[in-house]
Structures are given as structure tokens and as C-alpha cells.
Length: 405
Image (cartoon, rainbow, N blue to C red; front, side, top):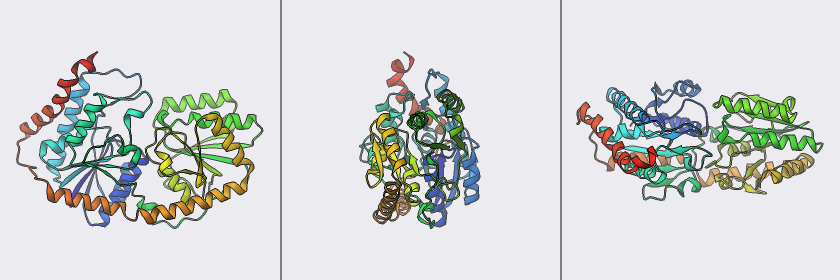
């Protein structure tokens, strides 16, 4: 099997880590993996180290960041990137194209133009991201995803609810590396230490953690906060630093770079805090449970499919409840230890129930390749570009007034 794994970004986040686990799964099966990455970030080195053939090419997103107005040439940038990707796939033919995220359509467009089966693996619900929006209306975007994918793999019920079509298949995160790693408890001692794992990005809402820390210290709780992850949003990072300074907690907050093993015995936490209210899953919670570290998470996201109240972690509705929960945990080490043990037991049950997600995906791809007609290499280069343009123009025609208003 020859597969092109397409990553919208070279940063290291939950979706990229899950994609990396899949790359390892496919390489273990002796598949030839070409990893196509949207920028030259730290993920590229990890993919190359794993044994994938890495190709970096720009992949325009069809998601608009906050305060960024629509530009007409974004449509042509997407088409141009898709056309360049067509050339890559012509030079390195594959049996299937596999996009790790729904934020860029370039690989799907290239695959459709070449007649290669394409699979979406959706890890996020973009329409729930604060202040972000798709270039096209949500329904139109989802229709295009549906029409350009032989299958749409989603990682949680939370995500599946937004893709209710017949092509949707729910397969949880692969977690291959975690399954094969012998982990021992990583319990912290001393000053109450809160860990937040994830890219520094305003979608992750790490400012919640800073406010909670300030409130805890105002109540006399000796607490520290570690924000561990790559700085993907420099403006947000600067705002967090300013927030720490204004709250008087700068000396109690530490920013750490991303680590392959983010929760470990050398630098442990008392508790792992999930601040993002739009997570579709929580890889971090599983990693915390593997180390017998309890998790505190918001009740209004896909995290509740992993973190169940009282069974390895605690849930909160608002920041007042978050502060109250952390204060109680800081004062009750026995509760921390009990929750940690339950989290480890929950993870063992989860692994038993989801024995081989990577194998499920590999089987799905084998079935996909065998059941769909294939036309790669049949059409001319000019025709492929016309096909890409026509694919996007169909949505453009429907949405022109909405986009330009």
C-alpha cells in the first residue's frame, strides 16, 4: 500500500500526534508512507525519524482566523496549492490520500482531480472554535468534505455529531506509542503543581489557567502552573505573559517547550488541567491517566468522553467551580491519589475496549482501495487543474453573495 498522509501544519498538536501514531502503524505494516506537511515545523523531523518520506509544501487553509477579512485571492491560493500537490502526487504515485484535518481542502481537491481515493480524518469541530470561521458556510463546507471523501473518520461522538452522513466512521485516537510504552506513576510532591499541556494558542484558552492560579494564590494556596507546548500563537503568548504580570503570578508560571513525553516522572504534576472548551477528544487526558495523574476538565466538550467525573478526574462548568475544585484537590492528597488510580484503571479498560484503532483504520483503507474505481494518471495536467477549479467553483457559485458581503 502506498499512502500520502497530509498534515495541515508542521507543529506538534493532538491531531499531528495521532497522525504520527498512524504513520508508525502503517510503516509497521510495510506500507510506503509519503508525509505531506504544510510547513517545516518540528513534526517533519519526527516523521522523517519514523521512516516516512517527508515533503513540505504550502497548504492554504479554508479557515479564517479572528479579525482576518476574506480575500478573493484565497480561493486561487487554495487552487494553486492543490495544483502543486497534484504535481507531487504525480511524481510519487499513491493508492490513497489521507488528510489528518478538516482545515485545508488542498489534498482532497488534488485527489479528486487525479481520481485517487481520499479519506478525511477529522479531529476538530472548526465551527465551534471561538472567532474562527470557514471560508464558506458550514453546511457547504461539510457537503464538500462529504463529496470528496471515500470515508470520514472522526475521533469522538462529539465530532461525529457534526458529520452525521453515511461515510462517517468513529474510530478513537490510535495512541500507538502510549499503548507500547510501559508507564509508571508520575506523582508530584511539594508545591501544588498544575500542568496544562498543548500548543500556546488562544483556542486552547490557557488564560483560564492563569486566572485560576491567581485566584488560588489569593486564597492562600501555594500553587504553581506549567504551560507545556509549542508557541503557535505569538500574540497570544505575549498576552499570557502580560496577564501573568498584571495578576502578580509571573514567578509562579513556567512556559515549557513541547515534549515527546509531556507527563513524566522527572517533572511531574499534581493535576493536569484541560482549559479548552472545544476539544473534540483529549489525548492529554489519556497520557495523564497512564501516569496516574488526575485530570480536571470542562464539562462542555468532547473531553467528557474520556474524563468522567470522579473516575480519574473532575469536571467543571465555569471558572468559579474550577478554582473551587483545584483548591479542594490541593488540600486533599488522598483524593489526588485515589483519582489517579481510578484514571489508570479507566485507561486499562479503554485500551481493552479499543484494542486496535490503527488496525481498524488500515482495514478501512484496504476496503476503500478495493471498492472504489481509480483513475489516477488517466487525465491530463490541464484537465486536473480544471477539475480542481470546478470543484471549488461549485461552492463559490452558491456562496458568492455570502462571502463578499
